[in-house]
Every structure is written in structure tokens, then in C-alpha cells.
Image 1: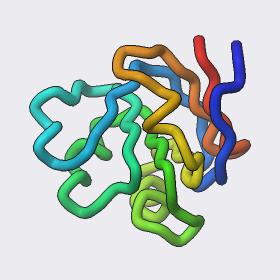
Image 2: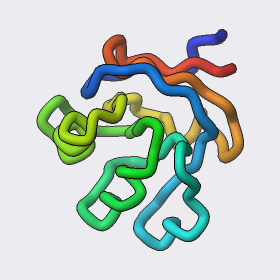
Image 3: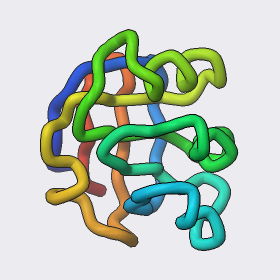
Length: 107
């Protein structure tokens, strides 16, 4: 495994899945159960996708931001403040997300 991103671990847990870059709720039709949701930052319109995701990775955010709070409530691993997750990760990539360490690895 190769370390691709480091950010803030916002919700602990480890998950593997396929990356889906999401810009908003309009991407819901292309989002599959167990995908890794990768976005700049989540908003309330994305909660349905968040609930179906294996993990969440965001470019910005803090321990008290929307993705952090919602992912902890749902028990989904989450890494925020990666700064360039939406640039480094590409649709279809297989990754492993470590929500405790705040790291994303390529598989």
C-alpha cells in the first residue's frame, strides 16, 4: 500500500472501496453503496450518499465540520483537511481509508 493523502482523522475506522468524486447531490445517481465519497466538503444535501458510503474524504474541514460530525454519528471512517484529495484521487481508484490516523492509501 502507498500513502496517498494525510489529513485529520475525524471518525475512526478502516474501510476499503472505490473512489467517487462528488461535487453535490446531483452526483447521487452515480454513487454506489460502499463507494468512498471524496469531495471538497460535504453539505446536508449529501447525507443520503454519506449514509451509503464506506468512508468519506474531504479537502477541507476540521474535527467539528459537517463531514466529521455526521460521519461519527453514522460510524463511517472520515478524513478531512487532506487539502488535495479531489485532485490526487480519481474516480475508480481503489483505496483504504484509516479514519483514526487520517490517512488514505492506494491499493
